[in-house]
Length: 113
Image (cartoon, rainbow, N blue to C red; front, side):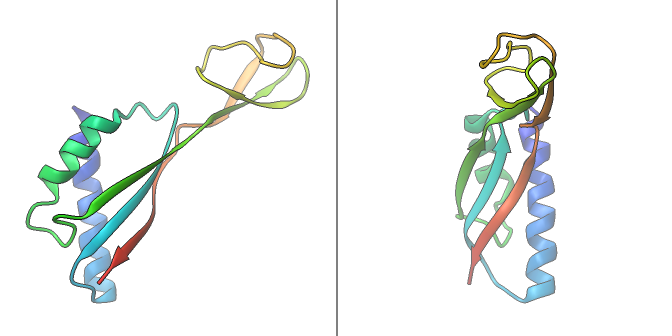
């Protein structure tokens, strides 16, 4: 379950930011996760609650924004949204697509006190 190691990385970032900016706790942590990032939201939420115990983010609400997958179609020269990396172009039906986004994962922001 790589969601646990993802949450351990998030915890490190939260602790570093708490030291750097002097906040005591996180009320809400917002993540942006791309469609192709390979993250299971339910597993991530479970791991988040477990890993954040004893950290400034203990008890914080985790909000996840899902970002779409996007690709450049070389057949019609359009940027399109796709549901799967191997989908054909939804505009022209072509199969020459280069994914350009959807694998990102980042902390968007935190509400702290």
